[in-house]
Structure formats: C-alpha cells, structure tokens
Image (cartoon, rainbow, N blue to C red; front, side, top):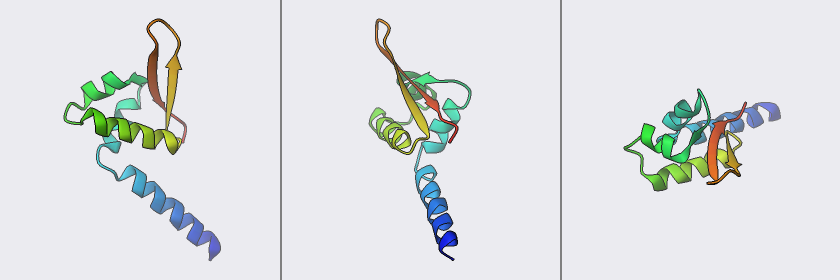
Length: 84
C-alpha cells in the first residue's frame, strides 16, 4: 500500500507540473531541437515573457528542461528537453 501512495503522489506531481497553462506548448516547442528564449516566445506570441520565464524556471527545477549557456560572443542561452 505504501508503494501505491508513493506512485500516486508522483503521478499527482506530474499532473500538477504538466497541467499548468502554457507548459504543453513550451514542451511541444522544444521537442525537435534546442531553442533560445526568444524563439520559444516567437512560437507562442500570446504567452507573456514573464510567464514564459516562470514556466522555464519551473521546468528546469523539475529536471524537464535543461538550460545551456553558450559562452560565445554574444553569450547565448538555449533550452532543451531532458530525457525525463
């Protein structure tokens, strides 16, 4: 029974994360290849930059999105999906 409760809590947490507004579109945008913040925002123009920034941080904290800083000139940041 303890295993069932742990599984249910993980499933519930997954639905809590993926059920947030815009998360599905953000993940869909990143499926094919890594993208920069501006490219993601251009793909979903109705999404404000503030909310996109919040969602990217949440997805990064959960291990769903990887943030990669490229140290070229100018410095770039790309986001990609993890295997999770």
